[in-house]
Image (cartoon, rainbow over the protein chains, first blue to last red):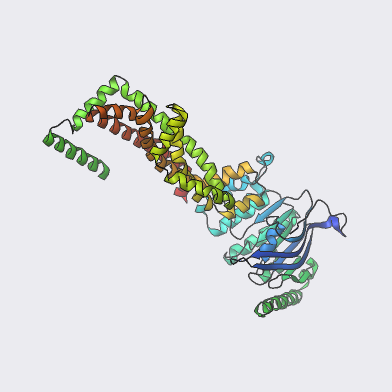
Length: 262
Length: 244
């Protein structure tokens, strides 16, 4: 298996504009009985700098695997991963993954480089509503607050690439909506390239300007749909038509799951 | 309160039995207490205690440091575990006395031989506990540290060691209580000082008062170490649990 780390993208068309480019020819896992299971095959994904991509697809199709590869956490695949050399990565996992023995503030500052330990995080903390919880331990927080801390930690590093793995799942609707708006505002304002795994169609339409729909295993992109911001702003019928298009693509990829060939 | 009452009851039973038997084979609590005072006043008891305590601390510290590294490596990498496990099984089943005898024969009746023998005896227990602790490390936190590019030092300090604290505490608690017993054997066989040496001399004179005064004082000392050092350190390291 070969992986490539591209230090620059000058040979690629629109190279300077891409913050993430993935080409996964094949990604396999070994099952418990030692048989290889191909999770992803022939997947190519490109995300322009400052854009917000949403990944959708059937449960267990390999979305999280794709995100782990994008994060550089899984180098065991055939293909290539290209990111700019100056990339700063922020990740929000499905679970908050906070250190229970560190306070909220310590958890956030832990990921900062030594030279940036003194930076003022007040604006970020205020935006995410964490000001009164900085001295708390994660065990004292609700799941919603813990997710906010995980998001704050990912944003504190001032990422150029932000990877979100179902960050709003299992939150109540009010909290989820509020957090979505906060994340959308922050990523737009800071022009952070973002890739977000989600199961929520409305969430994808609300946040993303690029939606990738994956097929069932071995996953490949069955729909690569750009959403222009003015397209969404036009009227409700446009949004309904996009939702319908994405829903159909998702239904198709889900349908493949029940197919014996899949 | 229940613990205090239980200890008082034990002392009463001991005093009653000693009064009934009325023999130097079973000295009473007051006789033993008087011997402790005498030995403390002439400085012999504190000196012998200090010798033994120093051996316990040094040998256990060596076992804890080496055992932590070995246990971590065996818990982290299967290949290391496959190679190291047979050695571990041999060391776990090697009687303490055999290790002590070999150390004295090969190295001589020296301080380093005694300390090495005790450290080798405790090492496998520490390895086993820390190997389990390493296997139980949360892979999600490890991945988080990797994703945020935490350097090796920060990962060990902030992610790995806090997860291993309960295992260090368990290894220290069981280790200290056994280490001092092994130190006494090493002193009995081949050292010119320490509680084990005194117990050996007292045994040859059938001086049960001296044996009890030294043994009880050392038990009290080890309980003090447990209560004033091990437990507070453990509580400090685990204070986040109390608030969670």
